[in-house]
Structures are given as C-alpha cells and as structure tokens.
Image 1 (cartoon, one colour):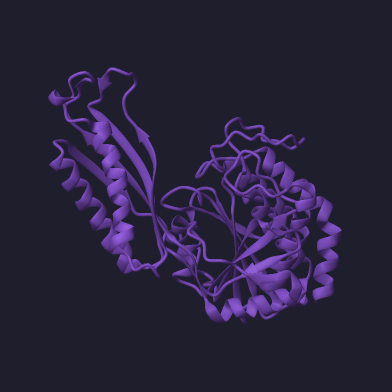
Image 2: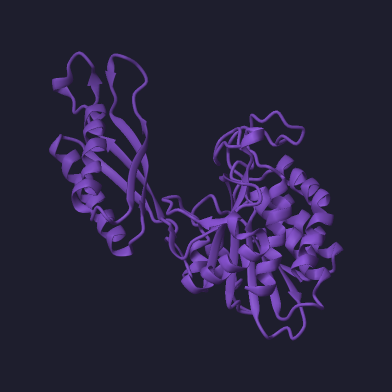
Length: 390
C-alpha cells in the first residue's frame, strides 16, 4: 500500500503543483473564500467524490472505502489567505492585490486535494470512511473551525480521529515533525483605548498625557507575566500597536493599543485576563485618564492526542524514513485546529517545505514567504497514508 501511495503521489506531482499555483494566484481573505471553495467543489465533482458545503464556504467531502463504518478518519486543511502584499518574483504571484497565501494554506488545501484523489483511486484497498474538511477562516476570530463544528462537521459521520498538517520552512522538504500533548498556545486579542483631556504639549500640567500613560502601561503589563505566572508555564503578552497623536505640539486625548496574550493553561489564561483588566484600569485611573479595554477571547490551545501522535510518528517514519522525522517544538503560535483537538483525538503535524540550497527559508506571515513545491508530493502522500493506517 505504501508503494502504491508513493507511486500515485509521484505521478500526480506536476498536476498538484499546478493546482497549488492556481490557488496561490487567487488568494481570498478569511470567510471570503468563495472562488477557492468553488474550485475545490469542481475538483471533487470531477473525481466523483460527494461533498456538502458548511459554514458558507467550507467544503466537506466523503470517501468510503471497504466496510465504510469500520473507522471514520477526518483530514483537515484551511483555505484562507492573509492581508499581505506579496513580494515574491514568481510567475504565480498573487493577482489579488494586498492578499497573499503567506501562511501556506494554498499548500495545505492542495495536499488535502491530492490525498483525496489518492484515497479515491485506492478506495478498494482500505477500510473505513475518510472525511475531507476544507475549512475557511483559520486566520481570523472566531476561527472557521468553530463555525464548521457548529454546522455539524464532526457529525454524520462522527470522526474517531482527525489529522492536519502545516508547512514549516525550518524543516526541509521531505521532512516531518510530530509532538504529543501540548503543541501550540491559546491566543486572545487585547484592545485598549486610553482617554483623557488632551492639550498643548507646552502645557502638560493642564492635561493627562495619554502618550505617557500608554508608555507606562506597556511596561507595567509585562509584570503580569514576569511576576504572576509560574516561570515553567509558557505564556506571552505582547503589545504590538500604539496609535495616538498626529503632530509635535499636541498631547492627544486618545491613544489606542493592541496586543496579544498567549497561554497553555486555561486557569492561568482566565486569571491573566482579570489581571490585565484590573491593572489597566487601576494604572490609567491613577494617572488621571480612563480606559476602555476589550479582550477578544480567541482559539484555545492545541493539544495533540499522545497515543495518536506516537502512532502517526511511527507511520511517518515508515513513509519518510526515521532520519526525516523529528519532534515538533512547543510554539506560542495559535491554530484554530485547537477546536477539533478539544473534541476528537487529534494530530497536528509539520510538513517540511524549506530548501536551504534554494534560499527557501523565510517564515510564514511575510511578503516573501514561499515553499519548496516538492513538499506537495510528500504532504499529500503522508495525509493519504495516515488516513489509511492512522
């Protein structure tokens, strides 16, 4: 079976590189993946794979092997792109100005389409049912995964296991990494507005200086992590944006801050939210201003099933060779795959897509992110292999 999968992956490589380039040329933002969804539907229709649409743009296909009720496995890929202007000098550069597949979701979607074709070709050779989940909106709250779950993606039939991959340019194409247990953090968005009486910069005594207050608040908030959190409990609080004022001689009446809070412990996460709110209100009030604070609670942490991840790693070693499989490091990045992992035994793994010799080393969420397209052959083959054997 492994050799059959590898042979089909090799045979289909050029076809699916072309599919990836088509998707890359036509990126769409979160919850706006209408043409991408239509493209996926057309491919599944051409291959005779039944599907339904969920959460407006999501597509859920179903492939039945022999003894279809014996096991139900789900494979998931995300479809959305980011609001980034692409700077790559490639012929398949984004044609949608200001939007780019800078997180590799074009590759994820392509790998799942490739796995679907392989699984469909070989459906007389494996047992069970594979549910194909093409999901919108991974990059933006509330997360397309949560909407797909609300729309019943984990029902009729209910998967017993779920797998997903994510490109990673630290790993070379042909390499994979796995980790059981905690693997990625929860992510919450912080929005703070500081309001006070502004005025002339030459008479600060007649104002409450919102710029100074914002500066003190940024420093103060760091003490929540450094002096309230257990040092052995991974967490990050970053203020990433300060907007206020527009000239040299006016102290503004309003300053806006934005940031993110990441954690891997739900009790600490909720405690930290209260500390952020209390510390902001207390400090800002003490300095003569008022604060409006909103914490937009985002994705929970990703927790891979330990047994499933160990089994998947073993299968990956068979597929790629032990020397090409490693352990994923803990990351404070977030993924809405977390919603699936809270309900179904899950395995979220890394697909190597880098190539040092060709200079493909830039990370995700950048205007020059790209991948070694040889990763597509490996990714679709691995997804098909795990679906059959995982």
